[in-house]
Image 1 (cartoon, helix red, strand yellow):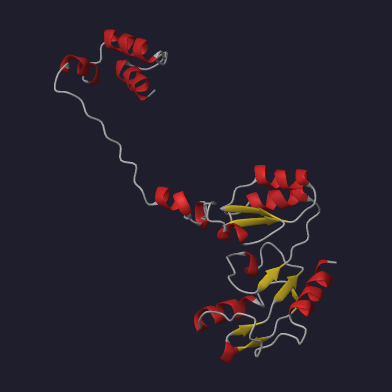
Image 2 (tube, one colour):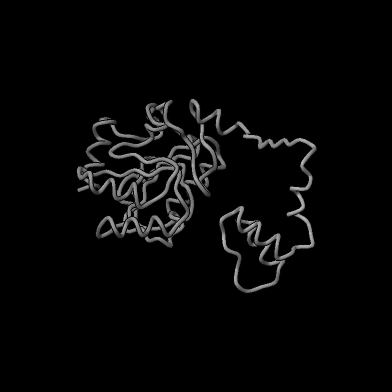
Length: 222
């Protein structure tokens, strides 16, 4: 059903067909990336749709690969090209398990009419962006932060998110040159009296085992 709908959509978008002469379809940005993406056509699964290329135009037609396996080359890195690998899963739990077994994606797109399913994906996974029944549009909404998480990137931009990302929150502490006696708790010797006082200040109990130093160190970290 999905492949049938994809073929119908392409026929609607490009009623005269799509090839290297088609003007309403983008090309790969340069030769290096063209060769990289072209190589991915044989990176796993079977071509179910598209697969046409034209070196002189850096053209690769919209391509769908079926019967793809997690270990296939096409599934090891970001594609950045008009290739869609399809893996068959039994249910949303299997999909979530697969997503969480890998690095966090830059964006996640969930297509469903069931709100409970979309919420399950949202709450059970982590990604730079999360869209339901759409793709890419979060990048066009200036009030939403755009960026990755983990290997897909750090920080975000758009609106206030840009300001926050490129702003360093500088920690500043200033104290007067007096009451130096209060600093004595920091310094050795670490007596039982100091440990009891630290315990009282922090409201934490020191460990039962270990020497005075270990008790003071534990208390001071809390």
